[in-house]
Image (cartoon, rainbow, N blue to C red; front, side, top):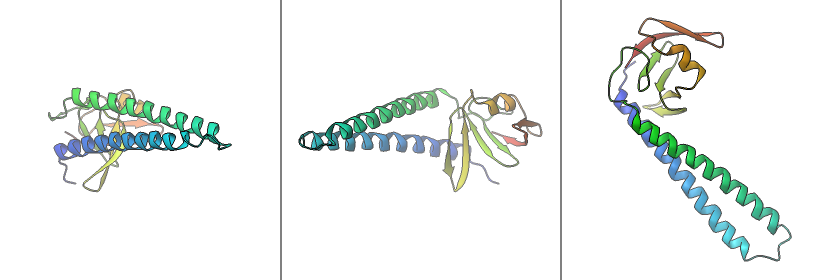
Length: 149
């Protein structure tokens, strides 16, 4: 399998930015909908609809703040270097998965699923400092490290 770490990192950044934009758009639509419903005070369901929208906006705001923090963390991690052991910023190719260390969430790069993993994830604790040829186990599953970038 051909790996282009820089392309994968760029694709993750694009993925993260798209998620931020989508949440902003969802919040904008909810604010507009709340404005339309506010004019319809005669509706029996007005208060419950208003509360539902407020709850949804709060959830979206919380998710947006999490993604903003993720973006800030992303910018602090050195993804530009190649690594010979698993550390934050490494791209790890195993026998079954490709992991990008430092960010959580799955995304696609050149049609290949990449698994972003946080340094606080249990799987990272098991793979930390592993080198090419070594293996690690999580939840009864063993992974063989084929390459580290």
